[in-house]
Length: 449
Image (cartoon, rainbow, N blue to C red; front, side, top):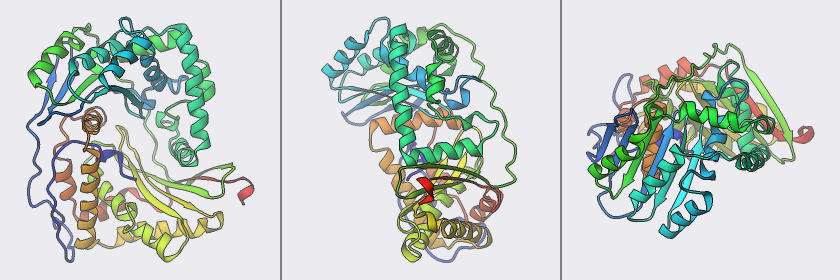
């Protein structure tokens, strides 16, 4: 599974080096600078909203998205899942676009709506197959600035979201990660599921939705992203007339409750009608904006990205102890998680966890070779290119970078990945991947069979 941090914007140049690594030596493909497209421009509108525009070089789809820094981290005490619920409610109709008319407009243009809420952000978006970005911007503006939040729609969306929650709880790959976050975080709001629980959602009122929306969907907390065959000056002018017309309002981000250092292993187990055990081991790492994140990303690729990774080779190919094994990185505004996952038989759990710790400790004790580091860097770059093939993917990357990382220009991402050295990898592994302070989440067969 590719990391969330892959979804960024830029152009990269492939090369590779091989040989024996030495501490402090730059290894990989960083001999040439990354080419940053000059067509990416960032503006701050008169009311404080941020506008990011990337011009396409040829006709094609256009993606428009509106991001806010609201996710499970920002949910008020007693209302887990409210950020996600508000995102759902924005699609139920606005002052000038009742639900049926909005869909009619988009269908007639061949477009579609999208939206997502994560732990640090929410966004809504429109993707159009060709011309018509002006109408797409108007639709997003109306949805974001003039939602109706009808009481009957609140009731209907409760049922929709509760069904979504029930479905997530039946998916072991999703449940094992939700449980991992719930156990790894004790005070920080990341411990709550992004969707909240069915009981949480049942308690939401229209006043809750309207009040939270009014406090968070304000210009100074908005990032508007437009990617496609557009003219930057025209987009800026249109954005000033729409999003720029929203009244200026002070926004104070909620203060995240700091998470104390985890000194001991924690375990969370759940049972269900499954034939395999789903395992996730997670360590607290740095925040997304910390330079250590680049080395953590390379460590993730070395340990568990693809069939050539260390854990896949050891656990599946050599030992036959896991059916699948991957590493995933959760780069968040607050310190996130470095996670290793596996599907296995319950009887093999001890062998799998022991081998994971052995491989983690090996990274602390030994420098990786030039060849292995170059393969990891190339693998990251390949995923980076794949995630940026579409206008929607590029818009997502720019929005993520602006709201989670805290910067609006991801152009140095690949360059910084290429600058990671064997010494960096060893230092970061020693700093974050302790042998006794990880969290273990398990979802397995009922009765441990």
